Length: 146
Image (cartoon, rainbow, N blue to C red; front, top):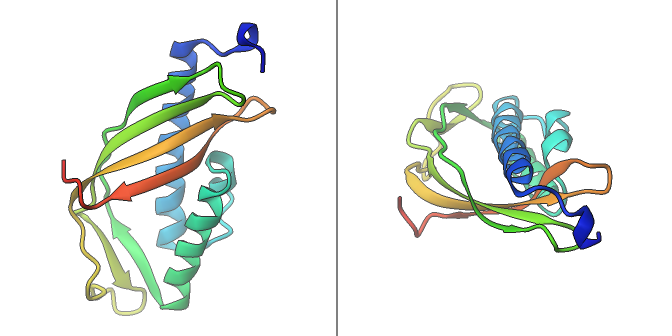
């Protein structure tokens, strides 16, 4: 993508944060079923993160587990690289998952060892040729409380 075609920083930031919030919502919805083919996942995610999220949701289903409750998020844009090919936006978040529990689907009892808390999460939004900003990569840094 030529520099003259680079997206506007404010518009890119807004679109990236919208995609990130959509990704979190889609992941919560997919983990509540759990359904690794939930259609909202492809609306906000791209590979390699899409495959990782689908694998995580598939593991929940395989083990008879699901996620329930509320996750609190406070994302912000931490970096822009709009002249890159493709353009990217880096996002940093403080996730509070203390109210977002992994439970057994049948009994609703907590899954042992599944802990929540407040920690840093990072993500990368990428502008795809079809004009959509999708979250293509992400990481949870449970060793970095916030």
